[in-house]
Image (cartoon, rainbow, N blue to C red; front, side, top):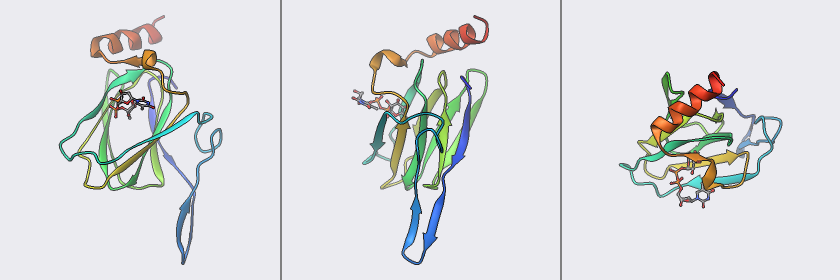
Amino acid sequence: LPGSARLIRLPVISDPRGDLTFVEGGNHVPFSIARVYYLYNVPVDSERGGHAHRALQQVVFALSGSFRLRIDTGSETTDYWLRDPRQGVLIDRLIWREMDSFSQGAVCMVLASHPYDEGDYIRDYDTFKAAVRDSVYP
Ligand code: T46
């Protein structure tokens, strides 16, 4: 749903050789995956995000290490401390997100529903709030 975020759990196949997790677009994530990107070598005091998207849906994972993902719907804020590579946060469109407190060596992987498009970003918080209002009361 637009304006919502929730945890997604991926399957894990464990045997004495280790763990294997997989993700299928349209199955474990509710969109077909058009893009994958990852953040790494992130300084501990770095802050990333600070924007929303008009159309993009994404799922954010900590493949290694940990970080905080702050989700802001415009009316409430939820912190997710991501540290389990099986568990991601599905971020629908029109959600403000901020990321910080990256542990040393953290790797954040993101699955995205569309290719990169700067025009899809809302980088101003008041514009974000107005877009949320317009989507709730069109
Ligand atoms: C998001 C959070 C979780 C590209 O050229 N292609 C890409 O696919 C991406 C993601 C970024 N870029 C360029 C755009 C900027 O010049 O890389 C530069 C850094 O991107 P940005 O400042 O947006 O990075 P973050 O970590 O603040 O945000 C990113 C995503 O952009 C955003 O969609 O939800 O990760």
